[in-house]
Image 1 (spheres, rainbow, N blue to C red):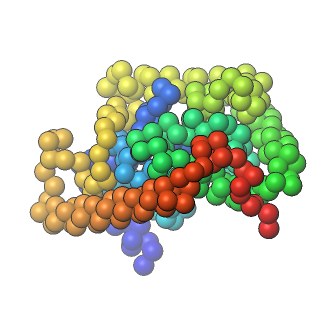
Image 2: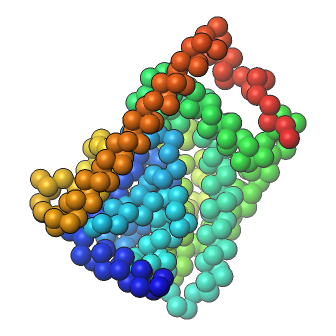
Image 3: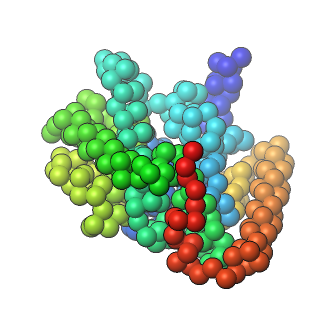
Length: 337
């Protein structure tokens, strides 16, 4: 049953006239400044998949973004391990299949290090150790101030809980997070050496994950960032990021011979397929399903706006006398178990 579903998804992928990556908006010189969306973008580029990119600004705190639309199928970030894992598991786009000689254990261990230690360090810097301006630019700048402020506060609280940070262990946790990140960079630097990719001479999903991380750290985080300073101690990792940035972002954006099609970020609501003016006509059945999906997303958008309106009313009624500095103060929050 599972193999039949995988075969059907693979066939849908091959038949799709357009593949569409729905991600968060471009910023800081990157095609998408979202640290979750960027690795998916890079994975598709490394696989030489032609695709379009559309920007979703309706769900700034949604965990289903990024997602990839192809034909009548959608691969969401919060399902089946994420977009990259879905594409691999369904045998649609699997860069790792090019390496039968590489131990899968070695690849998985390296991937786990990037997905945990480095991901946690980036979360910490983006939501806890910074003043919040970078996260606001990426996620909330299109929202009214009260809504953006509340959503930022909510996300910061969630990240602290996710990382296990309390008032009592904050300093200890910070030291642990940076120690693990430094160890991860050391290990990746040794593994990379003077090579172009982490494993042999072709990319894997680990390359895409780490490249997305490194480009975000080098392009987005300020000079005062501890994580950025730690990464910059490893010249080969910095060169890795700069080399692939030229190959996957700059070169392919300026030449039709690059990997994949040049992205054309534009704000849009999520949709099942690109619009008809992009060069093809969907099948009648697909058009009907696409319409139903659009209605679904519109209902979600209305629900989102309604909940945010309620949040604003609560904010104004219950916290109208609290200034912004008090919202930023963790003394009003209880993270203890």
